Image 1: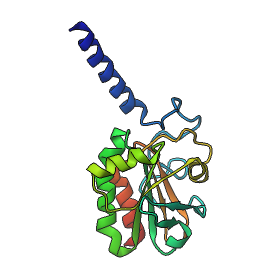
Image 2: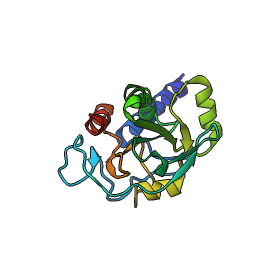
Image 3: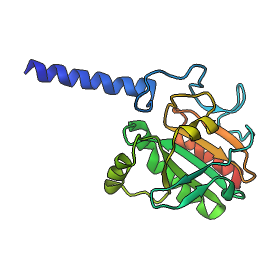
Length: 192
């Protein structure tokens, strides 16, 4: 009985730790040095909902789990939201339906959302998707994508969101504690 009680306490402490430090990719245990800890990475003291140019988006391509090519360059003219998540990240999963809702609400206005998984292998994502439906494209995002989109941040804490405007400029790199409402406000400011 005492052993079960100790295991429950240990599990609770582990879960609390994940919420405190955010979700790190498997194999990583340190927060990246100099990594922003809250809000949008835009400019010092920038409002997380103010669209500001952070430079051109890299010309990256992904292959979604259905075999379709996803190209950042091909999305020119659209607002592109890249949501970095993982099946083992509870805060990521909590935000994912709301991120998907942004795609549904603003899709007709030229907003495209991709869910880029940080899971170490496809089987984990496939297993999760068998129990959960997503209407947005899902692809695996490797270290090359991390380095191109989040220079110097390794391991990448998740959930993270990048918003790219219609001209291909990154206007926000949102940190794990950014809200879905902040994402939506940025998207809204680009399409209305």
